[in-house]
Length: 106
Image 1: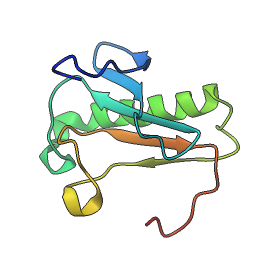
Image 2 (image 1 turned 90 degrees about the vertical axis):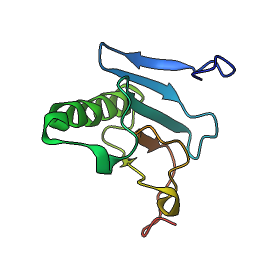
Image 3 (image 1 turned 120 degrees about the vertical axis):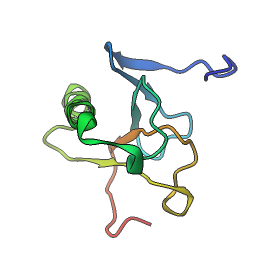
């Protein structure tokens, strides 16, 4: 995306956040909510980022409601480092909805 080779499908944007459709969706609704400011992993968050992370979660809830999943159910996920599935080292919150979700996640 940064190099301009991939054009994201933007579903939400404000001064601090961008939400895009995942290019490899794992559910009928799979959106990534990411801060515009670079933060590599959630380990790099500081107390100054508390409002930012709260905003990411509120945006995820609003998008779930907007797409009809607010009451049906949805999942939000932060991955941290490769073993947990983080492949892009810029924090992003996954919003997934529209199918049954197993527990524990695999």
